[in-house]
Image (cartoon, rainbow, N blue to C red):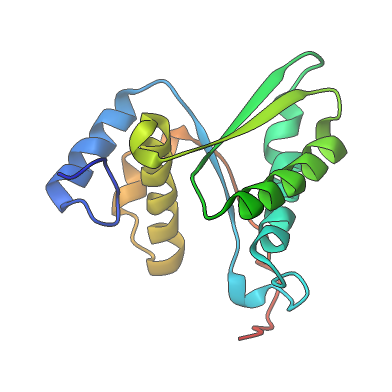
Length: 163
């Protein structure tokens, strides 16, 4: 198996079993789909800048409507790069949260996926959504479709591809 579950590298029988277990768990997830080639060059100037746009719309339309005054939010992300990159992502998230829910107490935590089973579950959910959108493969999402509460294609109206 390796150190953790990872949908891309796990065998089909392992993936199927993980999806069956996830289907029995009490959770929901949301997805904002971004076709990177449709993002204008200035949006893709840095990774943090690129992700800030979908985070903003996802937070505004998917998450913020469910937050109440006094709620606390913990954003857990898989460990990424350098301290400078983490600070850049955190700064972007801060801007997004402040625009959408300034009343919310929040923090971000970067962890290795092998240290957090919820990140491994999130990886499986994201992989199922990716397979659906990129390959029209509905197999992985079928088992957990009822858990998906928000799905939006951010640049779905766009026709121009920048690369």
